[in-house]
Image 1: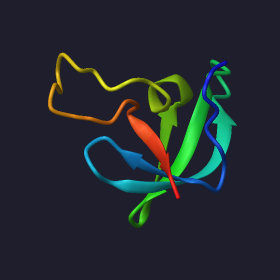
Image 2: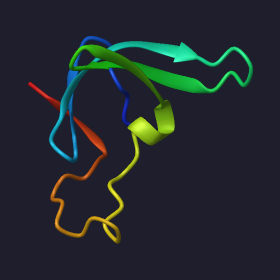
Image 3: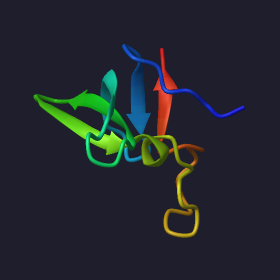
Image 4: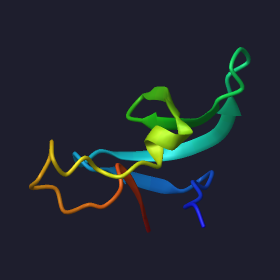
Length: 73
C-alpha cells in the first residue's frame, strides 16, 4: 500500500526543515496530484509523488531518513 500524505500533518524534509501540509491539489492542465504545504512564511506546491519519494541514497549517503518528507508528531 502506498504511503498517504495527510492534510494538517507536519513533515520533516530530509535536510531538516519542518513543513505543514495544507492541502492536496490537482494541476488544472495535467491533472497531476500535488501537495500544498507551508514552510516558514511561504506556501509551496510539490508533485505528490516527489513529496512521497525515497531519499536518493546515492546522492545523500549520510542521510538516515527513508523518505524525502517524513511525518512527525
